[in-house]
Image 1 (tube, one colour):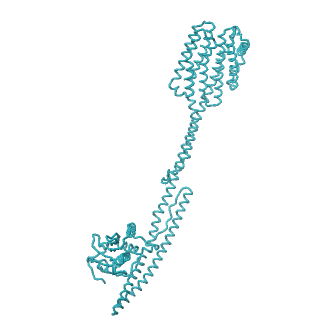
Image 2 (cartoon, rainbow, N blue to C red):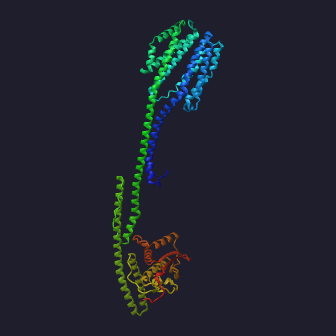
Image 3 (cartoon, rainbow, N blue to C red):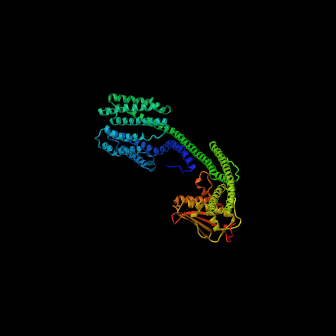
Amino acid sequence: MDNSGRPIRFKVTALLLVPIVSLVLLWGFAASLTLGDGLRLLEINTLVNGVATPSEKAVIELQYERLQSARHLKTRSGRELLVQQRLKSDRALAAFRRLVLAEDTQETVGEDLRMRLTTVFAEVDRLPAARALVDSGSADAIRVIDSYNRIIDSVFRMYDQMILVPDISIYQQARSVTALGEAKEILSRQRALLTAVGPGGRLNDAEHAAFAQLVSTRRLVQRQAMARLDAELRGPYGKLDASAVNRAFVTLESRVAASRQLPADLSPVDRLWNEVEHEQAQLVDLLVGRVIPAATAILVQIAVAGGLGLVVLVLSVLLSLRFAGRLAAELGALRDVARELAEVRLPQLVDRLRRGRPAPEEPLPRVEGTPEIRDIGQALDSVRHTAYEAVADQARLRRGVSQVLVSLARRNQSLLHRQLTQLEAMQRKEEQPETLADLYSLDHLTTRMRRHAENLIILSGAAPGRGWRNPVPVIDVLRAAVAEIEDYARVQVLPAPSVSLAGSAVTDLIHLIAELVENATVFSPPQTRVIIRTELAAAGLAVEVEDRGMGVPEPELAELNRRLAESPEFDLADSDRLGLFVVATLASRLGVRVTLRPSPYGGTSAIVLIPAAVTAEEAPALP
């Protein structure tokens, strides 16, 4: 995008916008990280109440239902207890499903957790088939227990997606507590299998393989989980591992795994289960007690990081905008000073010095701001001073040249006047026609030389020496103008109205019309005539000088009219336009308007509109 026409404030702001946007993005990135932790903390309470707690209750009821189903398979008794337990399981599963599908829970559940929940409910939907196996009485214990195991396993895989605590140490402890929960579930499966076989019973090959696998898995999971727990959380389970109840159970499961024979007393299994259930609940309470302070600390970090970051961001933006505004204001002031120098001071200085008026040197206003801007302001003032000296020197030079030209022109003019006087005396004394013709030709040549000398005086800004006190008829003015050109014989002056011109303007008007007539004769073929017409107009007197030449192109004609209207100052370098400068200067002095236009005959017509203030009704004789 082209920014060449943009203001400086826009460009400075755009320059500062890059670091500002970068700062905003960094703050947004940091805030999003901490905000993500905060959102996960806010999700914990919803997920605990809507998913974790109801699912845990459902798992406990399913564990008891699995135990009752195994006992029913062995003894075919306790039907009422089994039915009641199934009702408890159904209520727990229904509550779990209802809370999961609640609107606030669904807004919190992520895509991965939603997929896990879908798997859990798909396994729960197979519960009636597992119950049918129990009721049929034809299924073995391993198959029935496995059908319940799949449902509970899906719940534990769901737990892996629910540990949202962003604190790494607490996250590791939570994973260990979950692993101990899985060890507790394996203990529940051992209990169900031993109950299905019964006291004093003997494990068959399938049951023995399943029991041996449960023993090794439980011990491995519990050992790994205990190794990752810290001292405080390991305390309850550490005491349980050293207790007599645990030693009795370990001895029992080792003997059963080795001999396949179950002892008559299976009470160590129930006692250990009760202890593990109690210790697991205590362990969960201890972990929750850690999560709350950690969550509070993270929320405080979020508030501090986000709040302070936002404050710093706002301050940075405000400071950047203020800096941009001050810099733009300083540059704007510098621009105003430069514009005043270029558009006001220097043109006025040049104009006054060219007109010969006094022009005192005035320094530029001091530019305030940064050192670089102050230096530019001082540089502009130095430029102003240099320009002032250059223009003053040029004005002095022009005045000197003008004085030299006027001095030389005055001397020539004096000599030419004396020459004309002598020629007139000689003409009066001479009687020979040939000699008299030569004298007249010499007189005419001297008159032309006098006009050229007056050109130098006019271009130098002075006034010619000759003049009239009384009004002069316009026809005499026109004839006098024609008499001052070389090819006067080609000029035809048509009859003019009986109007006189003010004596103070006669000399300048003769000179002006003579320049136009001479120009018409020079730029038209020798065999053609130049016509001078004079008519009265509403604004004064109009004198038209028309030639029959080749004409002037329209662009050049427009440029000539512009120069005649503006009366430009004489430029020494433009010596080809001396007549144009003389006409423009005289027209400006008299208030006369000179216009060039194409002639119907193909040449050019010069119209001189003399204002009424210069005309007079009486026409006294020419002195």
